[in-house]
Image 1 (cartoon, one colour):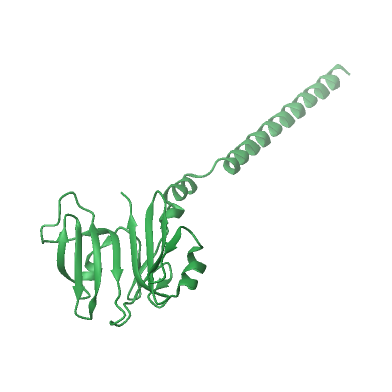
Image 2: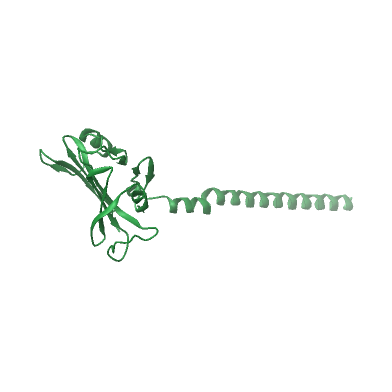
Length: 198
C-alpha cells in the first residue's frame, strides 16, 4: 500500500514538473514573438533613415532622364551647353540648339568657378529661360514643362506665394529645403528656377 502511494506521489510530481516546464517554454516563445513584433528589425530602421525628406522630392527631367538636386553638370555639357559667362559659383551656358535661351547653374564647390569643370561637377541650382523664339527645351520640374500654362502649374503646385504683374507673372515657392520660381509669358512657362539650399 505504501509503495503504491509513493508511486502516485512520484507520478504527480513528475507530471507537475512536466506541466511547469511546458508552461515556461511557451512563455519564452510568446515573449520572443512579442519582441519580434514590437521591435522593428534593423532593416526597417535603415529604410526609415534612408527615405528622403518630402521637401526634397523634386524631380528634374531633362531629355527623358530624371534627376534630383544636386545633379551632375555633365548631363548638360554632353548636350551641347557651353559656358558663356560666370560669376563666383554661378555659371551661364548657351546652346546652339536654343540660341535665344539661357541655362544657369550654381556649382557645389568651395572655390569660385575657374573655367574648368571637375570630373564629377555638381549643381545645386538649375535655372532655364526658354525664349519664345526657340524650340521648347525638353526640361521639366515635377511635371511642369515649358508647354505648361499657369493654370496647369497651379494645379500641380497649388496657389502658394503667387505674385506678379500683367506682363510677366510668376509663382514663387520657398521653404527650408529649396526655392522654386516659375515665370510666365503669355500664360506659358518661360522660366524655371530651382535652387536647393545647402
